Length: 369
Image (cartoon, helix red, strand yellow):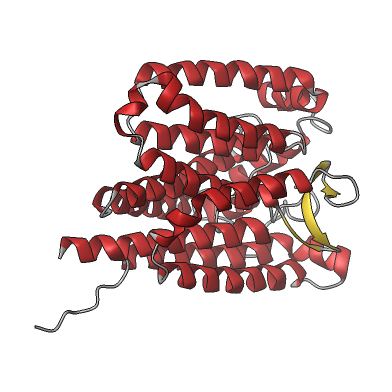
């Protein structure tokens, strides 16, 4: 009997490509004015996004055809490399400072953000560790604490940059993975309380974070200062109505909304494509998250299941934070919208992670047969 080749999840693959195409189009639309002003080329950011998308697709296809089980033997080395690069970027003269955060390695305008790749590296190692934890997860000291301390160490290094957004994503993803691995609810509840206290401490330690909280509570109290960005974001979303102003017809991108192609690209989507377009993007993310968790459920082994949970959780947490900030639902913190926002490190990371998901889905199909 001839064994037929089982492909990876077509729904997950197609939804990813659709979101990626929306991202390239919206990055161009959102950045055309600022690109023309800064670089005399309205396609400057779009061309770079297309380049990173092409590299990311290559990474996705490679990982989709690379047996994810082989990642397990590399997990400790991947984790060590992640921490090494998180430390290197903090060395004066080695890491470069952009937007007040020393979070980049590279030359000139081309650079990578080690914290982005550390997220995926931590997920691989945590999946490796938690897959063998078993009943130890009921113990705080022997099961719950070691992976938590690893994530907190990564967060500590990232906060030295500083980058609160990436830190929140890492901790959110860690909590999702610990829950999936069987951690006790009381331990997770205690962690949530500790996290809130830590967040309050970090806010109190930096005046600019206090300003973000103030702007979140009442942005119109300082409409030309602390509350400016969120007000412009809400103007964009509100003026789009149900059907939007039309692709390319945003008014807020005319230097009203700062850097609209990055963290606030969802505002431009709402303005140009309206409630219908913004809701469609969220629906696509819901489908992606659903297929990711479905892959986790049907994964042939514990490592694959936890790996799928981690990657899917990372995407879901990041979407919730970005959309929450853009809509004024949570205080501002710099985090990109996966597959949509401009940014090479974020885009290639997400596509590489989705490639791993696709490989797990392929092996889940083989296992079911």
